[in-house]
Image (cartoon, rainbow, N blue to C red):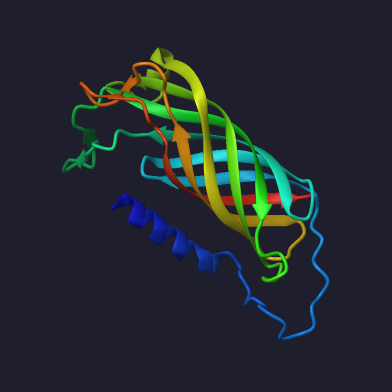
Length: 216
């Protein structure tokens, strides 16, 4: 059900991304392809079943179709059986929650542009994948959010993601895009205890990522 809401959010975001009507086919003389700057840097605003996340990225265009990138993000992971209660005063409580869990992946990957000669340049769809180390940090859920960080524990594992997305517009200085990703994060030990009595080893999931940056 949460995944359906995430997909609906992605659809609702599209009208605000300054997309212009697309030229498909040979109805008009073809314009020469737009040339965009080779470098891009920016931020990722991430939405997932676990909540909200933030990240940053650097991209380097290697050819007309292939772009290399590195990115880093911070987001919260949840046990799929978590249920949060809200009391009369607006306080939240998750039954049986022992630890909070945070994912800090550093990924290196490639992005491949699709339909370059079919869809005009103000919509540039692509597929992408990344792989790299993911730091998994846990802290006690019964302590105040920031105070609990002094009791945090961390471990590292191999992670990555695959995705599909698009960049919008023909502005050669500002980058606006939307990327749908599925992260794979697996712990090869006993896992982490988020809810009491349950150890989680698979912490990935589906993310909607809004990319905002600058090209140079």
